[in-house]
Length: 105
Image 1: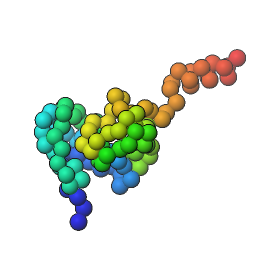
Image 2: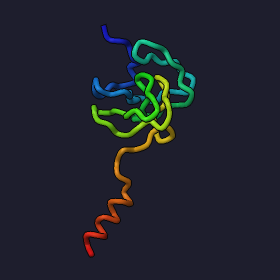
Image 3: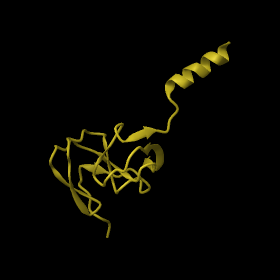
């Protein structure tokens, strides 16, 4: 039987290590995450992510079954996963603009 998770969260792919908020969840609320219970330290907005399980520093953040970044620190199950603890794996846009300018010369 699969582990229970709060119905305000959605798992987009079985490969994901994050869950996405389908509704706003208030600070201090207890939520079920993969069969355990965690209490949110801060409110979670729609579309924001929490860790489905513990994620180690340097580990890839996986959403939609694809890596979207790397954890910059250890992230506990149920913790908010966002810019404060994730480094994007995408090329910064200023690099793309510079490459286009170089090609135009």
